[in-house]
Length: 418
Image (tube, rainbow, N blue to C red; front, side, top):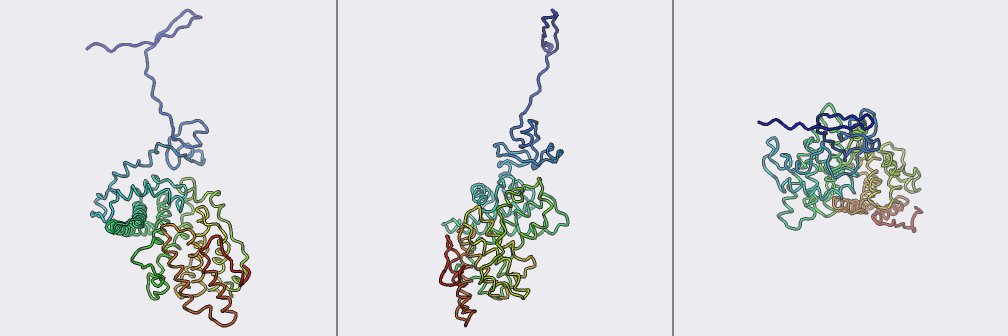
């Protein structure tokens, strides 16, 4: 065997009239960081691209933020890996062996197309691949994602067989998501990934609670308010109340490591203005009672009196849902609804009427039916025919409830000055 060639590099030094030779050494390849964080790029240093916090920012306690890049970070699985994952394909032996309804792979691809609309509604600046990657680590989140995708397909399928498959898949993955969600809540310890997954799952389950099922019936008479004694009559509303205590419990995980930093940053929270503490005069006398059970209606009434003047745009949707945040965490408002308190029911109906202004697929049927049911229930109780001042006040409130879904807001000047 012939020896390997001995390449040499000559270096000339003209001033000294000398030359030297050294063995040739191959230059090490250098990979440029094209997907580094903003802080490392600003300092022109190499970023290891770790998510959600690179090692340099973690060492310097700096805020680590990534821009929109075509290449995906190593910690986020590419879409090809997600499609081949057993959790998506349904061949994971630890999960249900039988595919139920629309295949998971179809739902996953549909979620990719649906995601921009979800960003507009509830998910803000969250990344679809980051959510799916977290879903592989926390399967209850992935099941919630697949259930939402199936729900969207169900709303737009016109073929009965496809509609049925989507409905089966929606219920199947929703049941898995709820089971995993409850199991994660029961754990004694909470970490960053689990906290983010729980908040995201709760938001998606809230969406699913509003997503109307055909079995519920579309007439106002099918609403919870006409089914007294049904233990699940307010299940869809109870689920909305669960997000507030969950946000409080996960408050310590709102640092720069969270993938939901957009929810907690000051620029986002600044959009949520506190309502004017002054109520219209007839609202003040209607809700501000000395009885402690009725005094809990005052804060949500203030929120509704203020937000009814907010233009119904995607950016202002979070203002409308602040009604839920204004309710007490002890479920006293919920209990007043079950007890058929007329003032509490009017407040819920008024909020549902406000939500009718948006008309999005996942809430359109639910809020419209429940709003009409509240109006019909109060009307059947004859609140407007009551004698004296009580009847006059109720006529004003029923007129407001009837007009609440209109934008620009309509004011009945023939009654009270509002």
